[in-house]
Length: 119
Image (cartoon, rainbow, N blue to C red; front, side):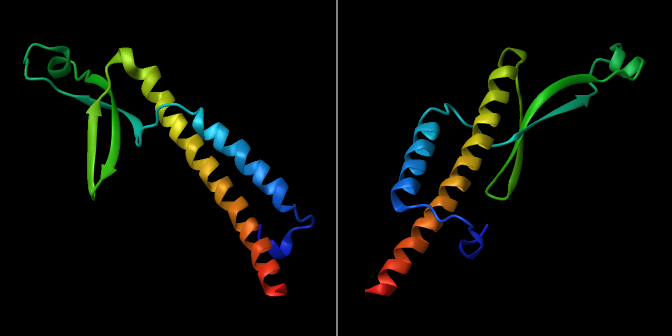
């Protein structure tokens, strides 16, 4: 929502209070990690294994991400599944809060700009 469409313009003090609230939420988020979780399957080298005799693939959970133009995928041990999911959710929450903070800062900019124009 742009500045021109705001039905109720907040005061500078109200906006700074919102920023303070968001900063506190960001501070309490916890660990973050970039990426997504995927499942993969593969055939092993054991010719007598069910993956080669019955076509039942071995399954694992992996963390996938892109870095410097390259894709990466690393196995996530079962003991870490919940924790890694939480880290990914934390990152999503942080991104949303940063977006909210940027929108508030834009409103602050509009207020300060209008004040500067009056001088």
